[in-house]
Image 1 (cartoon, rainbow, N blue to C red):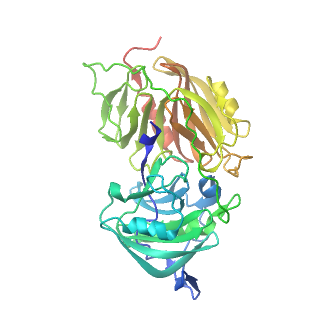
Image 2 (cartoon, rainbow, N blue to C red; image 1 turned 180 degrees about the vertical axis):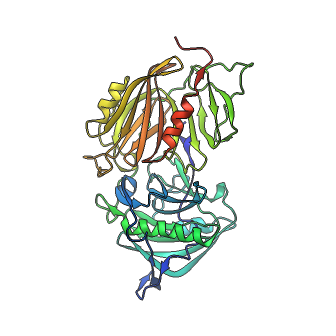
Image 3 (cartoon, rainbow, N blue to C red; image 1 turned 135 degrees about the horizontal axis):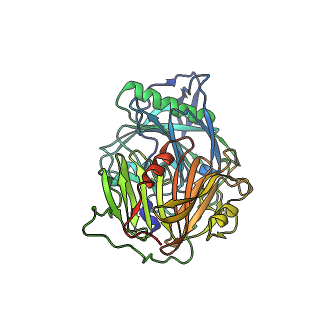
Length: 442
């Protein structure tokens, strides 16, 4: 079940020709001399916002609030908002690569380059440039390929040892920078844009990441622990699927599709209900016990999600790479969840709400933004579901939970999540306000 969450995330793709300052310094990498260049960050006076993440063993970084960021596994992506207000796939990123999309360990830049070069349409060319990130000199490479397809999803953002939830693709005209570290292959890059101004904005996003990123723990100078697998030991099927009314609105039962605006019936959360869905919504997993909606430009699992989840079992504080930082705490009530999250986590706006006759407890959750992402100060808490799905709350995000004690198969929850300050949580709340059950709960 959990493997169905895998999606494509864009890492280090594009032509990063503008915004690179030439320096006189040179470095020698693998016997070749390269120009050490500086990628210009955001201008002085830009009001950057600082975040922490469990990626790469725990990192602190800053982002221009005009940009959108996403973290998954050992990957940080910052996308640039276009003049229309939408953030597209053009992005800057820094990440650590340790495994292929099939779960095979990657130990070196050479192995990663061989993997890319094996794509039939790909051409990889070393450049004469390098950049410095986290104390390492990263060598530049140009990648040319046909438009991205499934075969381009070469590596996982998740650390070796963890399930390959998020796959990473290389799109046409890529410039990436690579270095070997004791922790894995460090990758930085920026993506293709349609015009020069777009490329400049993406390079500024990358320059800002490079200039501000720093470890909260030991960094990449020592090997990091292999990733963990938090799936519960016992996984069971959800059997309380509702019935579709043949005379009602159309059923929405397909996963991974763009949703045309309209009213739909959904039966995978238990009692069948309808939603009046507007523009810009996609389904992700849509199976008995798990229904996920995202925004049109969501970058992957845990970016901007509205999740309908049955059978939450427990909450586990986690360190980097889904490694448990404490014992699982069973949860059956909203109070159990709040207690499991601990006193350092901010809980606000807790109140009973009515979901068209179904009683729920709604509350907002924020994990401290300055948590160090260590076992002593977790910056993520994982909900484990009876379906095997693991859903994490993160210090980088706002969360809104609707906890339902008497769901179709025991407790259920609805979770809206998005990076701090994004309006997606309110948008998801508005969508949920259209929820109408075919048979009213008693």
